[in-house]
Image (cartoon, rainbow, N blue to C red):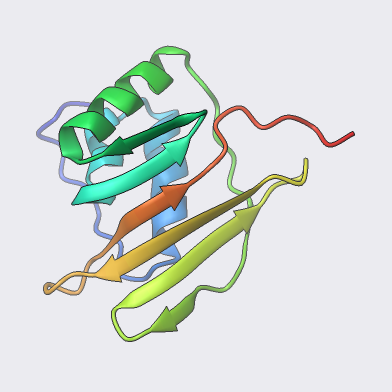
Length: 123
């Protein structure tokens, strides 16, 4: 996708995972970056990255491996005012957990994201 592509905003915390899967499978690095606050923290695959530029590099490296993302079984988000905890469970038992924040324009973005890039089956 081109960087000039307009990305649909997440109007609820639950939209974020759906957009992540769609954009990740499309190889849309910029689309993934737009799901995060400017100073967001991502922990995954043994790395912790902070901020837009580090997140952009993280996804550029990740998407170079051409992973296929699947939508997990999403738990209902736990919301308190402008904060929400989102999480999903996958068939192999791995779980993601994220903290989303409603922005002043009503759009939800992730501030903290803990996810598994290369989940391994449980023994």
